[in-house]
Length: 383
Image (cartoon, rainbow, N blue to C red):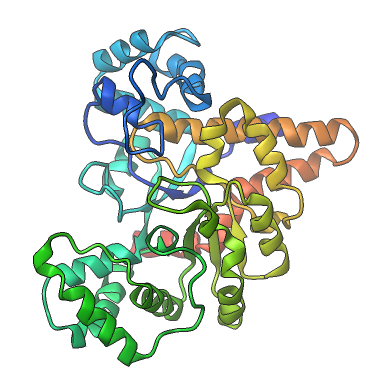
């Protein structure tokens, strides 16, 4: 019963990005399977990894190839089918029923909400990235004294149909930020320093005062607020992405009844489980780490289930780019859950009914509740 339930479950991927919009050549395809922005050293490939082996094992059959086919054959088949067919096959095979898409990263290179829904046959809703909105406001001009008001009004408009917000303060500063909101005078001074750099090129927001300001504006919106934590590309400094560094902030916002969503978390997933246990408004996932651990994802999923109340753990893929990542994020999670929970049922530790119920909670029900997706669906139907 557990395996059948997991196979049939229409997952809610509560943190994901769009699939790549166009074809991928060998180098671009290889680059899609690492968090590093640099090419693999000469004579090596990113596909010689847990993730790469999982692609050749589990994605090859979706494209009509034998499992474990070699990388060259896989790429040839991908080119024969074309990007659109490959993406449609892999997204449909994922069994994901609702994508909550962070639209603030590589938007020009990936499918948007409408395209993701069309390619997958699923629903898609938006997660708005705070820093991207702030950078749009900065690039559009206007004096520093008006930045705070313009950001607030722009966010209100952009988040009108969104189901959540996201911060990448972990990348831009670290999670060891001052937990208190900055004063308006501090924000104006910081905006003056930042906007004074307009003539020097791209305005990338790294100022800690402004990053904190965005968070507190988001808190007032009341939508679930996602934070990147843990594993990511080398823009971040890993030890400053430990979610326990946010503990004082979590205390500050607890009375707001604001759902705080800790994303990815690896290798701090046990810390995240503790935070989700002791704070009623904290939730977490193990996101992209499921893909990157491949055949070892079972151990990761088992560890994520150790101390967390099961209503506080969510499924996500954090897939971005090659649609293989969307498919694998779902498939590896299903396999890991079936193995871990199945073992506990087999040993008599859990009942089969409880295992099925937890699988449904983590895979879809928790996200549906926290992001109020039933309301989002009704709004969409009425428009």
